[in-house]
Length: 141
Image (cartoon, rainbow, N blue to C red; front, side, top):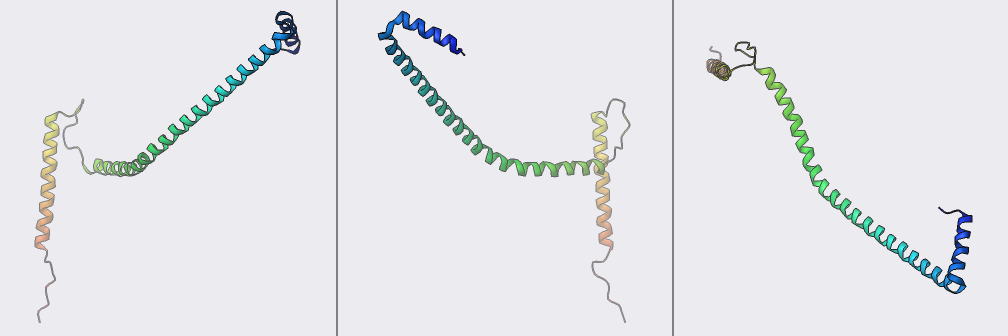
């Protein structure tokens, strides 16, 4: 910014160079240009603020349905994590302890054995259910 002394020197030089008749006209023109520039700056600022608020509103409108979808999905994800923990504890590795990991054949053999054991367990439960009477016998007199 200019200091007071510098402004006074510039004003005296302008008065000497332009003269007393042209200096007021030039000052009016500079003042008019300054006013026009300020008005244009205000219009641009208000236009940009309006556009930004429109984008913010569109963003809120788009975010609301996404939030509605995210909540049930996060609940499902949390439930699925629980199922994974239960499933990991339900099966025990029966195959050889590989150094670098099981081969596909080992995995298939173990899978078939687990299915066979599960079928045997289901068959044993079914047989036990058949042997147990569905209603108690009536006492004979």
